Image (tube, rainbow, N blue to C red):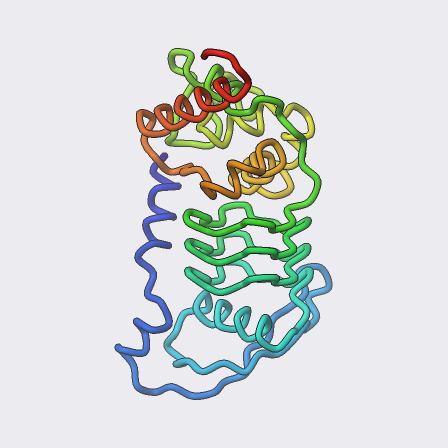
Length: 247
């Protein structure tokens, strides 16, 4: 992962959770936190959350999202950028069109969530459970695992340090997720621009092989080249065998 991405995700991984903050501070109060609409900039809802004034905006935003899910507030088109939602229970959350850029959704339970048209660029999704989540229309890549492995196994074609190499999405060097959206053609490119590379690749994987997606969950887009390629080869071999072929 390039230095900027590594620094960003390292920060996300280290960020204190609300529970960690509770161990450090004792001045907790119920406060009101306004969440805005991403387009109109009007207040969409006001959450009542328990936290310290010293807590970061990311933590307050995350607590507000949890409050909204619990209280059935409208999260559609909400500006939820950078929200700390690691491990959050967001099952069935109505997040259509939400601006989740930079949000930490690591290990979050998003089963059945509506994420159509959500902006997930820069969001951290490792370990998130997206089974049955609605990620909107995505292009299908036939025999996706064999196609991805065939492309990524070419010498110097895989670079897990960045989504796309110097040639961008149309280039010949990508990470695992980058290859998924690249091989999906123009539809994959549009999805990448709208949702971000990781979310677009997840959506494409989900419709191209729903059985794999339901069985194994998200692929690891943050692994080393060697680990990622070995996993792609494993899946390509399983897919070929299921089709009565050899890799």
